Image 1 (tube, rainbow, N blue to C red):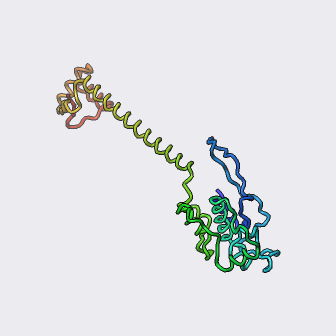
Image 2 (cartoon, rainbow, N blue to C red):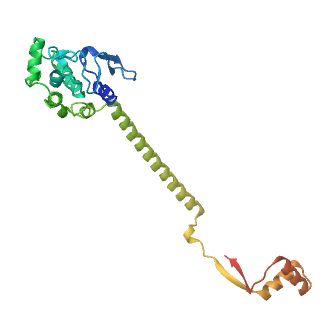
Length: 255
């Protein structure tokens, strides 16, 4: 969470310049889990804009923040850069593992001399490989090799947030349940169609095709005359003009 906070700070164009345990606050998480906590960064009194050199920085006192958490380049030229915060994160993780502050027992002049000579706090060999690699990345002599806070968030040393894993698991369960539900509905529909077919005892494919029968005009004329009760052919002609249009053949469908 400290790196997530640094991502936001750096994206806004600032460097905290004093990342250390005293400036990290831990709160109970607002989530339902009882063993989770939220971490917040505080004390922005030493914060500077990226590339800024504070007026208080001097060669005789080359510290932008707390000396034991400062990076070599900040001691050398006093320029605030995001790489300073990443070096401080390495010191923070190292102290969390060992329980000992960086450069313990050394005076400020000795710390400055060691930093300018290319040395960094000692990393115990007993640390896990991922932890050692993470700290070594933060302690890179070339500031550009430390990358950014966002890149460090992707380091194997940092586990994936459990919330994301739970969300993915929930999504997979929902997808699986939805698939099973649709499959079950499909089976019910198929069973229903089979029962209906058995009840009717006649399949659609077993139905007889339609037959066409053609009737001539004279036959139709005689039939309609009888049905309508027309006495004369002239009456039929007048009726046909008003109501019907006769063609050469009339088509009647018969099953």
